[in-house]
Image 1: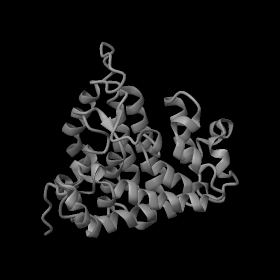
Image 2: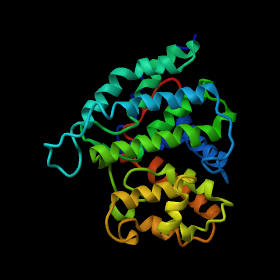
Image 3: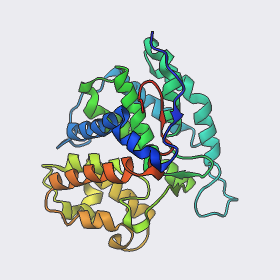
Length: 298
């Protein structure tokens, strides 16, 4: 019988980066993200795709965690612009209840793996001490999804539903947390980063846009965005930025503004895939908090 273990941090120093980039986990994460992107090429949020019972169960788990936001309203006495400390109450609830949520979601034969799966989910929504969120937390969620695939909870035919149902629900929940608790952007590159919080919204979202009839230049036209955001993750991501930030788009979101000048979505998607490997998987400050066990190995 497989012995599952509590995963631990293993990228403790920039000198560990070559080991990470040569590891089985790196190859699996990198291929998984690429495969998910391919699975939603040309598909809108309302396209037909198969939703298996296990995908449904993952969506229900996220619905339950979203329900806790009302139990932990923002602390109005806090003066800080970023980082409302009520987020710590929501996070404590997540930490306490995740093992049971996983038990409710998983088939009986996978219950032994809960000890190994739990940390990936707990780390997927932000850091309760720093009250921040960034692409490393998003990556932790992807690693949780990948573990579920490796365990056979999801199978390859679930790929489109993993993005359009599970990941989409996760992003909307993260946006709710960012909006409610003013989470600090973790390790933000400021105007030169792709986005303060998410990356894969735009990578997967650019795959959806292929063949959509909407050119990249229209992705920052706020009328187009508002008309089509419900159908395309990329446009919904742009809409969220416009809601959260003031001033001209080209000033606060230079990278996404520049991307709108690319002629074809295929090129955008290819470029974002490379950028993800370099700027997220390839950066020590982002990956130093990742954990590894027996399912994803360094």
